[in-house]
Image (tube, rainbow over all chains, first blue to last red; front, side):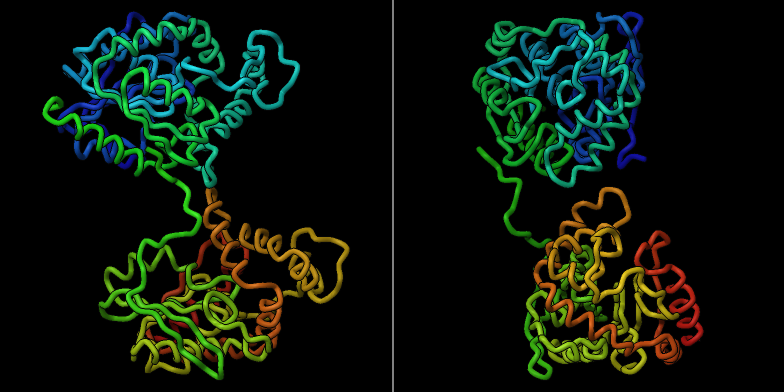
Length: 289
Length: 268
């Protein structure tokens, strides 16, 4: 059951892969809430959609691999540029000329690609817990992914063989790392449930395309011209807050650090995050109208 | 810009419009009033293992529509902690409620209780002129003889597991441990970590010695099943019993047989 049902929905064809989108509300401007890692689908925005749709036109969609979108097992649909092109196609399919992009975690990469390569479609960009290769990440994540696992502890679970053997256990571990705040049992349960709607085979296919390197991302940041705000928890155990800081600097954007917040503050601190998004959209003023 | 997400001390959604102390036999009782509408709702305390903040989910909403009075039980919160067990008879709590109503200038109130250990029932049965209606949420009234506890309360035990925690020596040794166990049984619903943490915190606002005095006062069999049934029969105000079906502390049948049936019979 949802607090707010969509006013319209449909599918976009990306070659053989169909992606499902939904639209809520019809205010101005349009906000495109991007997908992130396909381990979850568009419902991870559940605490944002009802509020934002009271003020703006909100478009969400399921990326390839989860939700009501197809689940291709080849790598191609999961590449960074194809993911960004798919977002652009969703804007076209929903009759959206320009939108404020709102992204979480690795969705930042697709937002940055659009900002650099489709600037006419982007009014502004909100990054939440951006997972971008700017500055150091967490060292204990350098675990062997392709080889058979020799440990089942901690980040050793980030291993394709472990996923195939113990998918739900990996999901529970991963989301326990995402939600470091106390009293997060409900968002952890929600997220594990969304993770179970796809499969380890899909996540493995998604892992194949190379990630853009630091120089590429820096180039996108330099090419970007739109207003930016970066919202980052200082207890983010997935993407360190230093990366959000680096992204704000590289894009000339504002940085809001949420003290005590983890990787997904939009679920654990929804009122704060929603108000920050609204404040940002309002600051765009006439350019957004 | 850095925004703080964690507060060292809980803030409230709604602050009281008036507060004060009522005093009985040298015991000071702290009360609060919220809102102004009619009628007045009195939210009395339950077992003094928690204090009036356990009504935090009700006060802000109810106070938008009506006057709400809460008070801390003797033994917790900002009320005094008498050391004598005789001070913790449930009849004393009922008398405290009357003193608080007097101090707050309230003639008559709808009494909404949670886990009533007798005081709300005594109030409604013996002071009908002060009680306009009675709501009992998961009442802990002994409407039949309680089962013998699995472990003796006063003996030193060789285990701390499960119900063995309901033990004087364990309480004195690890009060927090008891609170965590007890409240994890109160909140059987998933995603209750916040409620458990709140209640453990309120339980730590008092101490095992005070709770032991209160426990002895309560265990004095002041309210045996016969007395409870007799009191139920005297209640004349409109009455509603709310009972969760997954209650692990209070037998849901208690609410049904002792509360709902007899009280509605009494009312009719």
